[in-house]
Amino acid sequence: MGGKPIFALAVVGMPLDKLDTATIRAILAGGADACRRAGIAVVGGHSIDSAEPIYGLAVIGECQRSALRTNAGGQVGDVLILTKPLGIGIYSAAFKREILTAAGYAEMLHWTTMLNAVGAELGRDPAVHALTDVTGFGLLGHGLEMARASNLAIAIDWAAVPLLAEVEALARQGVITGASGRNWASFGDAVKLSDEIAEWQRVLLADPQTSGGLLVAVAPDAAQAVLARIRDAGFGAAAVVGQMEAGPAGITVS
Image 1 (spheres, helix red, strand yellow):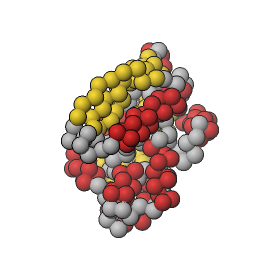
Image 2 (image 1 turned 90 degrees about the vertical axis):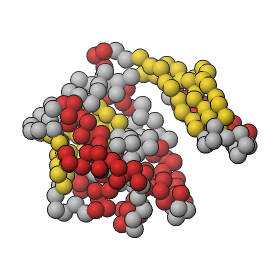
Image 3 (image 1 turned 90 degrees about the horizontal axis):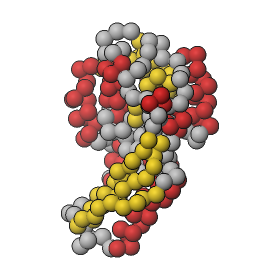
């Protein structure tokens, strides 16, 4: 969203009676590797013995005010670009049930380990008016936050929304997360779905995305150029998924 990271602190909780030290070292090494790819170092942190494994990074960064993009600032007519495909929550549920294929697992790792570093570049583009991550509240939840912050409505074209390769089949089988239902319960009254949207599609739109992509509101005359730049940065599945419109804050999906 326009920010550039400077360094990170690790927050670590590990069940020392359940995980061997080699596994814990591998987790810490993975975090350090991600930071190296972002051009920063892990300079410290805090660790505890915990009942379940916990690992995260508190990242300190900087941003010029002119480059700061929030979920507010969207304008009427702005085109919405989604940088990563949906379905990480469903893939995670399938993995826990041991029914995710090897190809699906590789696809999940590919997208969840892809850094959203392109957001820093997009923040410097005056044609980009608003940015948000699409993570725990799904596309609808974070899109609704953008609509409310911008005091506009959002229209999403379901057919244009990128999906992970196996996610439709899994969703049709009922492989979903409990979080998608809780998400829908919290914001569903602000979403209007066309009669053509099936239950599995609704679930996907509310699917929580671990390490999801960005939702970008960009001026329509610059949309194709921005989309090309995002794809060139490695987000080959990025797509235009909707637009911002005048009207009360809310989302329609057709």
